Image (cartoon, rainbow, N blue to C red; front, side, top):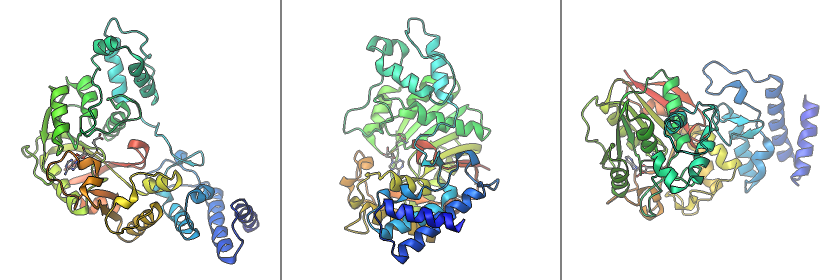
Length: 407
Ligand SMILES: C[S@@+](CC[C@H](N)C(=O)[O-])C[C@H]1O[C@@H](n2cnc3c(N)ncnc32)[C@H](O)[C@@H]1O
């Protein structure tokens, strides 16, 4: 084993033009040794592991190195990928680029409805794989306006200035996002009926799909502090009860009002203070037995940013260091996760934060970029919210997802 690791380490140093100095050589050797050891063990995972063994591959040390600026960061990032490998999803030796292990719950429901409308041409058939979302989205992109009108899927993206998160396709509807959320609820044992809140709904891309496919079984609500986005929801989705909330609790809903709450890309931004306050508030609004879905940034997100050299958000926009680079920022995030299971950095100025641009008198003290390990999430949740499902790399293929249930 050691001989093979040395050969690989030599080859790797040569390919990368690295001097075979003792420090480098020893370090790289240790990476390859770990890699070979994990390969030889054929990676057996404990039942609590968040990752299926089929998803798991060994760390690609070459990938780790590609975009890093200095050997120190390269070393640190490789160590991180290795230490946190249970919380990073690799597929075929590469970091997961696209989640496909879910059933297209809402896409199928939308398509079933479309198939009942006479006069719609060239609809995709009902075969049910995760990529159904591509076929439906492509149909919608190519459909002439009168076909979209007939289908009842004619909302176009809001004007610039009204907050909206674009999905994978140049259409308003993001079927995939919702497919994953609903898949997670169903896997947690929920049946989809009752009062449903999209907390931090922006302009309602999830609500639009829910309203289209589930208006018979779900009573839909949306809330967001961005008034223009809520105005857009009210105009385009009159069946949805949309409210503007403050940056801090409470929400204008009675105790135990909701059966479901979702919050996609919200706890990815809250400080721990805001995270704890808003968890408690969601708990107050949930009925006993109600379900809450939320997403977080975890090690997988950091790994994606390292390996895919994700340039956004511009790291120099964050408070805490006038000279953040991608590497120094991610290095600080890694230290935060190692030491405290959490890392939060607010934006320097409100103008640097697109999410809060439509929010009147917004402050960034409690809104930035947040990375959380499951331990930190557990510590922040109130006692009456129990984690019943946790998955690595779900929504946007980078965020971890949680389903919690009210006791
Ligand atoms: C990254 S976007 C996600 C939007 C939406 N969930 C989606 O997936 O399309 C973050 C959203 O959180 C909203 N937001 C910011 N502060 C919030 C707060 N204190 N409570 C609820 N939502 C907030 C922003 O206005 C923005 O619409």
